Image 1: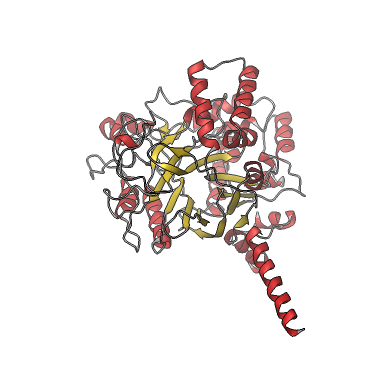
Image 2: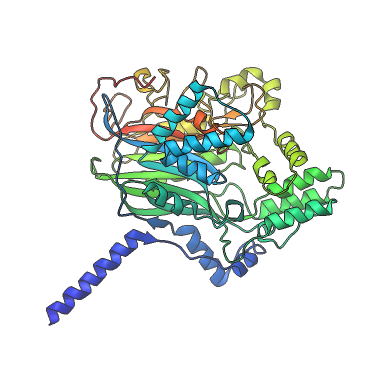
Length: 528
């Protein structure tokens, strides 16, 4: 009888461990608590403790039906296809879902959007869009930035969980910010001269208090089991609570400023608790030499000088230095070369008023690329760095404030002596172009293919930027070793992202293929 009881207790404990592995998630805040947080810069007591638990506890959801697709390529064998995408909060959730998992459904949805807009795409481009959707479908690892959960603007969806269910993937989700702007919470109104427009905004912003959670973060989707995950919060480079509040306060006091400028600042502000972070997830991958692959999904700060992004990167590298086996570091790294990332609020404005034309035009005009003045004052340096934030920095003469971030990544060695793969072999790139990092991130004739562009890009002379990156620690300690778990065919899926009017997101997806078995030194079949 005693032995039976011991067995029963052990079985119960094992079941408890399994249930934790299947589903883990943080606390949620009540609407009253969110309203309280909107007025407290440094929450204390029980509410402060609860907020910290939310910001440090990842959601983990493992699905028993998840099964790797393991696409193959001649000369490389089975692959771990890896995609990274900043999905702009998930405004276009249905298109994102179809793009990631249903090429035929995606093409039908695109055709419907084009019909609505009374426009068309030439057959060759449609064929490329379909090809990119087919590539996306076979991604066994997907990293997403700017993922909402319980936000009015994205219909209160739990976007990470819904995508995981639709794609039959496991997932981990980390809360980057808790959105507590009083405009979102409905406790503040926009002060407009047009009463009708003010009412329209108030109605559009009014939240469903029973559904509003205010979460915004990063997700890792995987067809391999997620054995564990943790959140590492990066060094603070910007105060998303106090600074956002103080800037709008100073604007509103400036009587000389145009009313529409104040309006745009108010509608684009983001009062938040939390800060930039990395979601570090460990996947069970049998082909790995350690049976594990570590995914480091990050999102570096936009509202800071490049030097602070370097600080965040060094902080993150110290966190992963001791990791054995393959490591994939990916995310929106905001490598703009400036102290503020490009901002697009056209979609936000359009969703909040019935007749947004005037405000949309003002938004595009106001948030023009910060690099345009430099194009005219320092043309040589502008074009040296344009679309290539990795370009060498020549102090005083031809500086590049982002180059330090890439040199730190290039010089970094893990404790086992391995490095991030920086190779650029023409036969292992998607378009035959070689150069540093070309295997993992698509290059063009000059620099890297952009992953972000303004609607007004001055015919490519400005406003196109490479912000999103994938770095892979392969099984080599230099640039001449094995191609096992090394990146191949780095690709930007711009045609797919721009397949509908206004685009699916303001960022394009990026992708790389990683061989699960040693492909040897012979070059693979061309991807061109």
